[in-house]
Length: 181
Ligand SMILES: Cc1cn([C@H]2C[C@H](O)[C@@H](COP(=O)(O)OP(=O)(O)O[C@H]3O[C@@H](C)C(=O)[C@@H](O)[C@H]3O)O2)c(=O)[nH]c1=O
Image 1 (cartoon, rainbow, N blue to C red):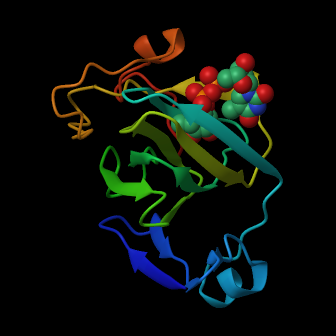
Image 2: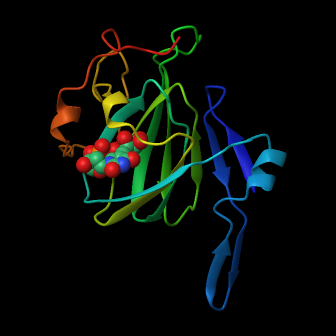
């Protein structure tokens, strides 16, 4: 397993060791001890799985109180995945990191608590799996506006019109959100 730091301290790309053979491949998608030894001591309490058509954009979501850290990956298709630092005291407040996650590259992405998270599906039938460090609480869920000019996120849409949930079309701007301290 290889960890790749990003431009913001915290969010981390993880490349698992892939064992390929005549039958296909094998990889460890989660191993508490190996991650702890690599510096990510994480305690997960919920696993999620979603499927998205090409152009579906989910996010940017965060939970407050009880923020969730998320270890995300893709097992079919491809996404552009984004984490936005929404900790006011952070020198990186409002900045984001993005990474392509796909069934082909098998990369995982650690999105720590304190970050808003979203992704756009770049292929039909994209399957997105993730582990969370806190359980879902609909009353604490918030949406940061995906295309807030203050975030200036390149979603790699390539001219595509994204398909959004009603709640994400009316997400709040960075200047309006109840950010973390
Ligand atoms: C996230 C979630 C949703 N649900 C339900 C609520 C709703 O009826 C249905 C669909 O929920 P959503 O529209 O919020 O699903 P979605 O837009 O996929 O939400 C997810 O987006 C990505 C970007 C994240 O980072 C996740 O944490 C999560 O917020 O599933 C749960 O029961 N448990 C959960 O943990």
